[in-house]
Length: 80
Image (cartoon, rainbow, N blue to C red; front, side):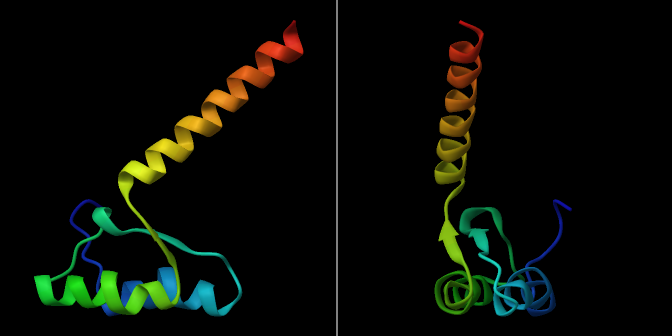
């Protein structure tokens, strides 16, 4: 999937359709690609924010790290 481009069909399948069905969709804006810089700008800065929360990879890593830390702390507290 590393070579997968974020074209309009994929956007509709992975972002727009679930958002229109009421799902909370999040897109990692610096982990997507498109066929040109103009199309990428249109997708990430103009179109997708209408359907999805836009975050960066750093924000995802930070959120996951906090969840992991909380989980480890809860397990340590439960075992004490």
